[in-house]
Length: 444
Image 1 (tube, helix red, strand yellow):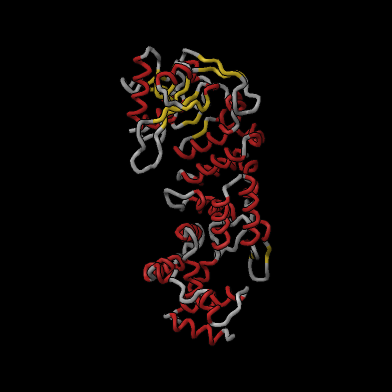
Image 2: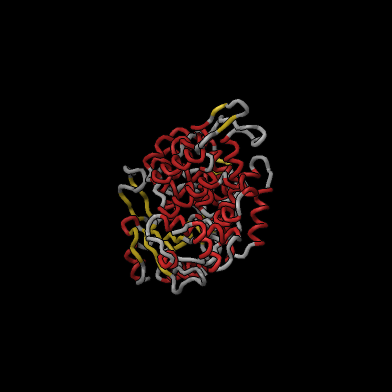
């Protein structure tokens, strides 16, 4: 439906005397036989002319020649109105802030327009009606060869928008391509300049790397280019931090973490991906050699603190930060599941988004000792235990405690927790049992 709508926009512009083509990533994906997530249109119509043809258009970036044209209906089941970005052919003059052009000059030349874009594989135009591809930059050749190459001089392209350095490595990982040597050399040369990119844009690009299915390759490229040290120095500190061979025959903390990324489920929630990346971030600071083996005492607690700093620096939402930290805080608890009381295990299994905790533990095991017994034990417990047994309705309330003569106060929580544990353990099964338990264990 989105492709049809984009084609409709192109046809409408053409009927009114303008040039118009699909452009960018959607053309790349169509040539690769993939369904694009988004469609962009390039035209010689100015923003004002586009807005007159499509009255409902949103002028989100008209000063840069960019407007959004909303679709006629909400996509089935998605809850969102499809939009097509329509951009006027242009050339950009100067990039003082390393992101936005200082001056935009509208153009009537599609060739001039693509010359300002980032990579050759993203610089092709497609006529969706005839199927003709306009390739002024050698994009089809690089697509066939599996090469990420900037359009024009890489230093200039990266100076215009430093985020393009991260995007180059994400595309190389995502498509399993190689980065052209000159392009990669420019990234290494300019890596320290990535700090001018906003934290939010950096976070979002890293999240895409982590969730598109080729995270390990992406982070290997980040490390090799020097970008990792700039955006996530806490991860580079894992390199060379040895681990006990009996638990981690695969190697040091860095090797383990990158290997773990290979075992993340697809599609992968962003919070799970970040939790996986940061689950052992406390190990470098807690490494010590004990009398029996290498130890990382309190690495979970230290890791939570380090990860919290990272989440604040990258400006995660509070909700996402809480889940990432919860994944780190609880990832070692699976080692105790077979010894846990029923009440403790049930409370563990009802952590928010527990599927993410399970997925992290599974990946952690597969990237190290490969022993999945704890994972399988918990999975079996979940199959055997109905949801109402994991989080049952309380048998007594605060009002019941007051009626029994207890004075409201901090002890209420202690009593109610004790009753809940007894209920989860199966020691009390009815309201009468619970009231008797309270009377016996917590006399007034």
